[in-house]
Image (cartoon, rainbow, N blue to C red; front, side, top):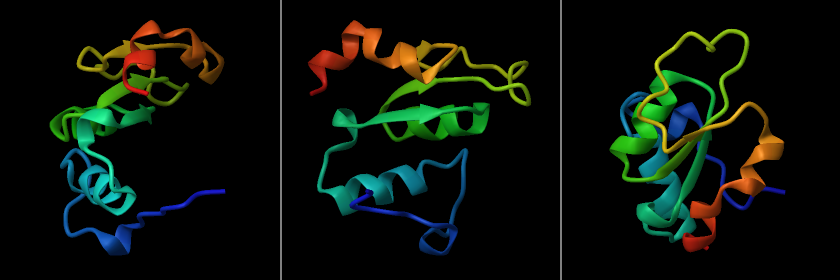
Length: 91
């Protein structure tokens, strides 16, 4: 189902550092500005934004009180992602 998987063993730095996302973009052959990241944590949002990627945050019960103000969009469900107009310009 996935064409690229980046695991902990592939990285020397971890979130909130952007390295995991930059490695993924490189393996996919896609420029970071054309990537969309779906995250559920503040550290993940920070990593995505530092990588110059569009980031959709979906807080969960464990992360709902974290700071998601740097995300491009915050939604409550994965079902809401299809309703984000900005994403059509990335495709």
